[in-house]
Amino acid sequence: MNVLISQIIAFIAIITIGYIVFKYFPFKIMTKDISLAAFLVVASVVLSYFSLMIPLFGFMSFKVGFSQMPLMILGVILGPGWAFIGALVQDFLDIMINPSGFPFLGFTLNKILIATIPALWFCKWNKLTQKQTFKLIWLLLFSIYALTLIGIWRATSITVNLTLLIFTTEMKLLLSLACSVVIVLLILLMLYFKRKYPFEKSRYHIANWIVCVLLIEIIVQLTLTPIWLDIMYGIPYIMNVLVRMVKSSFMIFLNITIGYYVLRLVSKIRKDPNGL
Image (cartoon, rainbow, N blue to C red; front, top):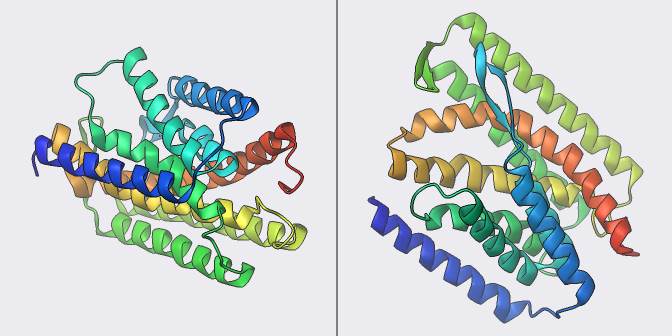
C-alpha cells in the first residue's frame, strides 16, 4: 500500500466516523464545554512534548507519553461530537507547532479514534452489564498478554533506534516476568475497584475506562500505527509490533491508573453528579 492510497483510506474513515458521530450524537455548544475542550486539547498538545525516555534493552528506547489521555477524557465527559472536533483541532495544532513534513491523515485518524472510542463506549450505545464488561476486559487483557509472550519468545532479534539487538534467553525471561507482574497488578486493581465502586451507580466506572484503554491499545497502537510507520518510513510492521507489545504492557497500566484518577478529578471539577 503506498502513501496516496493510505491517505485516501484514512480520509474515507475520518469522513465516515464524522458522519456517524454528528448524525446520531448531536451536541449543544455550551461555554463550560468549550472551555473544558480547549483545556484538554491544549493539555494533549503540551504533553506530546514532554514524553519521557527510559532504559529498555539496555539503552534509552522506551518512550512514555500521556498525550492521548486528555483526548480520551474529553471524549468520555463531553461526548462523541466534541471528541471528533477536539481530535481534529489537536492534530492541527500539533502539525502547526511541530511541522514534520506533509500531514499524514493516518495519524489524524489515530487521534480521532483515541477520542471517539471512549466517547462512543461511555454513551448510550453501551448496554453491557458489569459481568459482560469484565468478561470483555479479561478477553482483551489476556489476548494482549498472550500475544506479547508469543512475540517475545518467537523473536530472535530486534532493531531499536537503528541498533540490532539479539534476544537472549535471559532477556526473554526478564521481559516475560515484567509483563506478568504488570498483568497481575492490573487484575488486582480491577478486583479492587469492582468491589469499591458499584457498577450501576457510577457513570465513569473504571471497568469501562479499562475497556477503552485496551481497545485503543489494540486498534491504534498495535495495529494502525505500525501500518502507518511501515508505509511512511519503511519500518517493518512485525518488528514495530513486537516493540509496541512490550511497551503496551506498561502503558496500559499507566493509562488505566493515572488516567482514571484524572478522569474522576475532571468530573469533580465539572461537577457531574453521576460521575463517581
